Image (cartoon, rainbow, N blue to C red; front, top):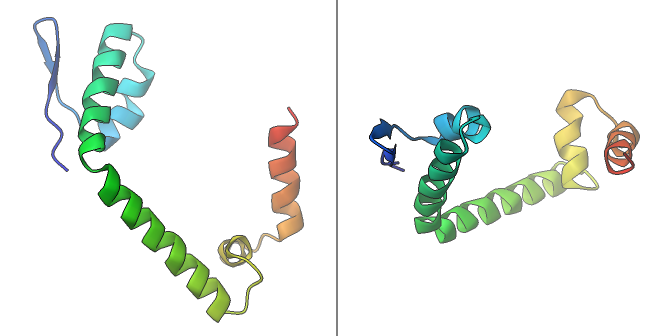
Length: 99
């Protein structure tokens, strides 16, 4: 995906995934932040269906792998390599939502 630079006033700013997510998203200058968001969103919109299909394929792959490996769920499968049991995971999630 080729992100084009965007302009704020006379200044040109390069754009990419990492630049947006690590820098422009947290930019103090609202004009730069908003221009970056618009340019980033416009480019992503061009690929929205491709991204959705790729995500769906990933979800299906994870579900198939979890089933083949005998896990009760995809979450259990993803937690296994980290040696985290489902109860600990659920406690953390519950804590996040109860704040």
